[in-house]
Structure formats: C-alpha cells, structure tokens
Image (cartoon, rainbow, N blue to C red; front, side, top):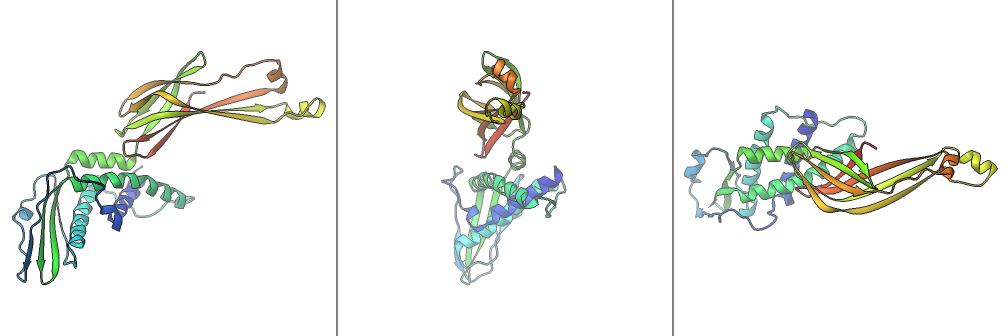
Length: 284
C-alpha cells in the first residue's frame, strides 16, 4: 500500500504541474485576491507576508518570467510542490518506479483515477490563495503567492489519492429481493445509484443430452439492470439497500440438464470527485 501511495503522490504532482491542469475550473469562492503590479527597474521588493508565513500556509515564488500568467503559474507550482511534499513527508515516500508484470496497465489506470483527484486539488488550491504579489522589473515578472492549506485538507487529499475503500455483501434474500450491506472505510464518499444482475447457468449434462435427445447449450447467461430506489451515500460507515433479482427455479428439466446457476450482482455509482465506482456483492 505504501508503494502504491508513493506512485500516487508522484503522479498527482505530475498531473497538477501539467500546463492545462493549473487553470481554475470556475470562479473562486474565496475572497477576491489583490494584485500588486509594480513597473520598476529596481530590485524586487519582498512582500512583508513572505517572512511571516502563517500556520498551514505555503508560500511559492516564481522565477523571472516573460508574462504575468507564467509567473503566477510558477509561483503556484512552487506552493503546490510544498503541499504535496508535506502530504508525503509524514510517510517518507519518494518512490518513482513501477511494478513488474502488467505495470504499464496498472500505471495507466492509476493515472486515470488520479486525474479526478487532481481536478479537486487544482480547485481547492485556487480557492485558498490568500495573498499574491506580482512585480515587474526590467521587462520581466516575478510572483509571490501564499496558499493556506490546512491539515484537514491535506488529509482529505491523501484520502482522495488512495480512493474509496468499499465493499458489499449479502445480508439476506427474500421474495425475489436481496438485502445488501455496503461499507466504506477510508472517508471518501461513494454514491450508489444503479445495479446490474448477471445470472449464468451451466448445463453439466449438455453433451450427453445433445448426443441422445436434443441440442442444448453448455451455458447461458442473462443480464438485467435496474435503478436503486433511493440513491445510497456511504462514507466511513455502512448502509443497507435492497435490489430485485430473478430467482432460479429447480424443475425436472434443470435436473435432467444438471443445471447450476451462478448469480452476480454489481452496484454502480461514483465517488465525491466523480470517479466511477463498481462494487461486486459477495455472499452468493
């Protein structure tokens, strides 16, 4: 798990630092930020707040850039790198390698999953800019930025990076319905809205029956989908829901064919940052 988390941290930082990732997703909800742009050939003046970084504050500084936006991006990158390092330093994780086997596929899936976390990260950083100072000197721009990112948000970022830890199991079956318990243990909300039931019947005597009587398939499957009557939200707790499923009926024909039916129920939904979630119900 630590190894996976280390890869996640490095991918998250890479995703954030890609050119388009830093753009705000919409208008910030934090108070308007004051820009102080000075045109001067004098040395850069260090803002007073740079030397008085508050608790949970992360200060970023850019190099000398050819545009205001480039300077702002560099300063934000600097602050973001500190946030990610602070997030991982507690766990002393600095892995930057890949696992063997189908690592390429696993790496791709992990990056795809982290893209959702990066969007939330980008939005939360932009909404928590407390100070920004952009100065112009000798035709270049330099930016200082202060981002407040408290421990509670770093902990949430860590949880979102790892994703939800959820499972589902059958509690009981009655009257063509199944009562299912869903549990989530990592503090990442998941919302379940749909379910899928797949019934696969295997006819163990198919070859013999086909040889002497009539042709019958060795296996057949049927899939049904439905909407959960009331969407279920689970986060650090357990909830119970009920879904309908077709019951298999034992008769002389199924006895003759040696039929065995396997039922599989999968719950579908998404987590709090929009990642798709699928849970296979255990206990059949």
